[in-house]
Image (cartoon, rainbow, N blue to C red; front, side):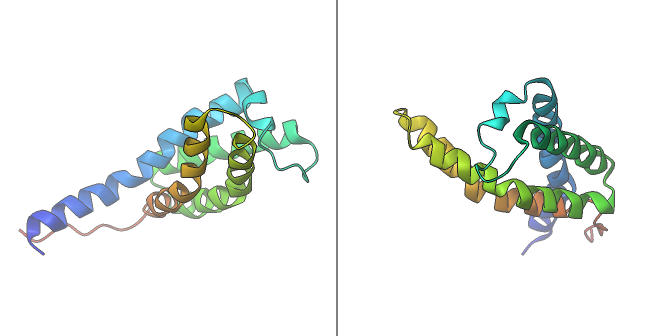
Length: 134
């Protein structure tokens, strides 16, 4: 592996948490401003759907702040949050199957495996980076 590849990989690792921070910032605001967007995907077995949407929105915004600041705690908090909301994404994909728009069905199922790279991106927050040798 040449130094250019290492430099590119390190640049991506430094920027990776900001991908999740941007997503959490936008999503967190939508959770609080228009909770109905998310109440429909809260798994059916959970009570207090609107309250859970508000709580998860606040949690996303708190994690976003930590990720923007590159705080080490934010890596674990964001990872935990992504794992906790995974069932809601599964519920959304299941709900999409009842509709007749193929694009929505595909989009909602693609979200499930996309959480894996998002978790990797979040875990880069607060990580110590070495400068590549020159």
